[in-house]
Length: 326
Image: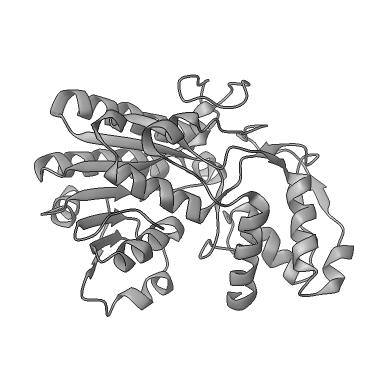
């Protein structure tokens, strides 16, 4: 990834998670000093094991809900990539209090710590869930609806806090509204596993995946390398690009039925029986947005964002990793 970023000290909160660990890996490869803050509630130690002997990598085991931990982690840091959060719409519906404590309280703690320690730029994981009940397609950053879940509320509040801190304290912030990110190291197990690794895991076991609803809901599935690119570009972008939010996506949409069809096709190369597996259709999931498709013109214009991996290309790369690691 040809982005000129080296010799910096960068804090990645949630650095042992799926997206965070991939960011840590690329930042270390570019010879930056990386501080990883994680409490391992959803992050995994195996995601960062290969980094622990790197002298440029520092692990701080702690919680963003603790302001002192946030202050310690962000001391003498150039940039913050804030990935720490409790994801999952269903999880937030089951336990809205904890989602709010981590996603709002923890976010505010990190903003305060960044302000106090004079961090140069604060780039954070926002969410496409912010578009809520808006039925306009494609999704444009300036047009949102009402949130459909506690999780969506927390991520929208992040944007509001970032905007206020930028205007009030002069902190440079950039929010990246992630659209259905997938790729290596994404957890394939557990009650809140994302759909792509969950389906890959089930199909490899010759089990029928369950689609919520008729499978016509569509998503802008975004491969991890596209997300790494837009995060790094956000760190090096000029002043014209700051204090706003961007869609972080490929800029296309595919239905869940399409997704399963591609997975069966690509996985059949490893086991021909997979192509004959039937799909189960269950009820629609509470809080889900029916369709998600990002307009990425703004990110292209201000960040020079140019996503390389389509859904099909990303699936092929992901499947290679899961076949070797599941």
